[in-house]
Length: 138
Image (cartoon, rainbow, N blue to C red; front, side, top):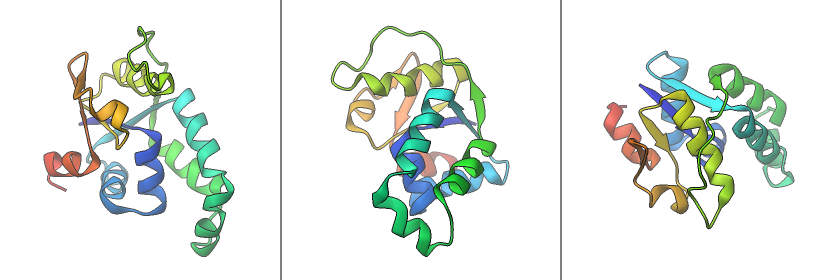
């Protein structure tokens, strides 16, 4: 199975584990493929570098760069598809959809209400992390 984690799900999985962490663990075990694009990875790198995460990373003995590089190495990077605007309220979320289309993923995993309320995009299901874990039997 191929997935795209939006940035909030990736950050949650990398820093707090939970259901998004189970998906990342499954990718590390080879049970699924995580897909990303340069815009999504750039956003993740910027978010992980925010001051509000510094103490959490320090407590784990990790740097934002270490966490980011580990995740980036785990992903299959694709060139995003060119898609028409889909999320008017938050156009940045279109990057997730463009990556999903280009990567031909089975699921987009997100906690973002703008994405989740779409339910699907071009035949690709958009689900919360808990639903993805349940679907995959993790």
